[in-house]
Length: 148
Image (cartoon, rainbow, N blue to C red; front, top):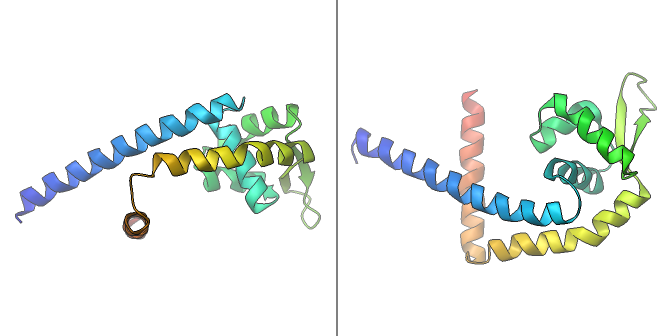
């Protein structure tokens, strides 16, 4: 394959990946909006549910959200009593976000359907195809990270 053909193939892959991500993300977000949360609120709550308390300064990088938006999202979740802020016991400069009992109950109720929705969206792929896609996307992500 010539260099020009390789470039065209790379562009085609980029377009296909972008379109697939867009349609999957739109469908997942439809369900999230039905829960009464914005997708970024859901992502923060899901992170705290699965990973435990997190320093506010690190949440953005873990859910791919700009750090300036974290305070706004945390404020909204705190007003809904789904999370709370807590001072770090070992470093008073650090504030953690923690899921509340109400937040845990909320995720307990909505996460199984969220997980099932994603499973259904990806059901056209076999388990082997999913494993292959995971390996390829991981390889791609790591190779790009190494370029930085």
